[in-house]
Length: 283
Ligand code: NAD
Image (cartoon, rainbow, N blue to C red; front, side, top):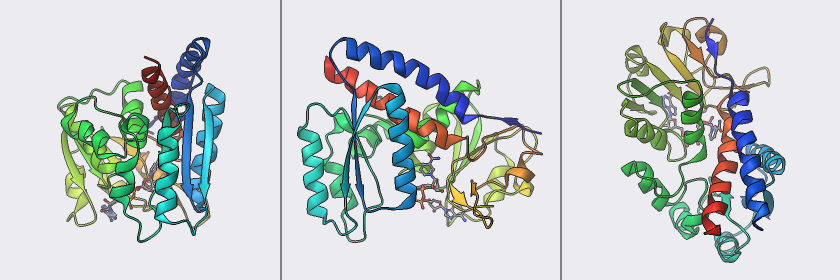
């Protein structure tokens, strides 16, 4: 049976440290504050918002919610971002995407103040991921995967890593972050022929697709570590990842579960970036 890489444990460690940093900021008169911009009522967004708000409350980060109805226009979203940018008491901003059809994602992303871009959505932040330099913040989910590996002492240098899923939100930045750590990276996506062939040679397999049962026991080997980013609901209505946990965990060396895996760490990383933004704004 594989070692379980417990996201809750990683999150608890981070939270402890962040509570102290938030207290430190408050003792200097700064209350860290996160704005959350949401259009519509997508269930996954609402759930993530609730857990982010709960995590922030525990740490001592204020949260201001900017809820726009599902019928909101692009102009309203842009005006909301402008309000967030102008508000000196707000240090970080989380904006839920994808936006409704017809919205210009690149334009909207570009309007957020880079100093408040704690989820790494602006091209400025993403350029830092590309160059491997500390420009802005990394996307929280990708950062959460790295934190889990770090916490459990996995070195990345020279490792063969397969990332399945290449979205701008998770897979693509994560692939580049592994490359920066001198891993050799294969970035697979929907057009990749024979994903299993890439997995054969991997030390670490990350799945960030959103397809339950995508990674099966025949795709993995002993000695491998599996990070499951996917969040899906299975036929029984239960939350699950992309990986067939029961089959795969019997073969590989280590695996993240869903729930209690990457998702548990992501909100802590969001809180950490917000604290960092508040610390930077203070200077
Ligand atoms: P997305 O739909 O934007 O991207 C999916 C990617 O998977 C694409 O690159 C696509 O080419 C690839 N893909 C699709 N089918 C494939 C297949 N059969 N084989 C190989 N690649 C395939 O999704 P996303 O926003 O990147 O999210 C991916 C998953 O991660 C979702 O389940 C989402 O809910 C989850 N997620 C989890 C967290 C977290 O904190 N745990 C955060 C964000 C997203």
